[in-house]
Length: 359
Image (tube, rainbow, N blue to C red; front, side, top):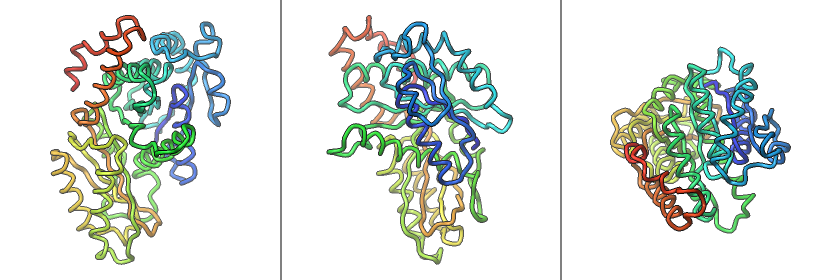
């Protein structure tokens, strides 16, 4: 999938950078261009991307201090400037735009849904969101921001791929080191998903292509992406269990949103040397995923690569009924109850029928 990436806010800019660098390092060519947008000049300065600073007339490049309502207003006011910066990058080859944001911070949580809405209004390609959920230790304001933002961005985007920070922070890691590791893990997952069918090395029996990714995400709502890999024998006949185990691990321990296995649609891409990929293993894995997700819409195929390992990239779409999402939303509601002064009447964000309809 030839994609244009737009990082909004601090976390969005860093994850967009990680995705761009992973794609370049692997030589996939799926990320055709990238842009970072923020209200804080200091967060844009270190990024090796083209950038747009919004809200200068109101916050003078100092950020919004976690105020996602202000972040939303500034993106709304300066959306033309962002669209103008994106216009020359939206070439005929672009097949999707991915708006990347941390959903807890002010600029990302407030600005990303607005930008998704404006992009959907202007362009006739899928507009996806890649959203990072804050961890339990990131403060009540971040939980409230993310609860509000999630509801809105899911409604505006064609699909929203979620990353749960709590799933990827290792005990004892520094905050900065932890986020760098999270970005690297997510860049690999989403980077491989975008590259499926774009930069294959060798000839597979049934290669996953862009249309299958788009059709899987057509279920809309929330999505999760998983990854796992294992060493492979040279003989494909010896890799039946290798393939099935990689797919199981990608789902059970490698999902960006853990335990989100109740899905409306799924896609399995088995990556590796085509001569090592077991067709029997791939078919068994696809049937297992159908049973695990409860969906009959599970697509599957190869991702030919020059490698002595077998890897599985799994995309699950329509996972909003999962326990992990319910736990996060309850945490956000509790944050509203515990700190009602954080926003004027913030409880209205969760006393809205739209979120009940969504879930």
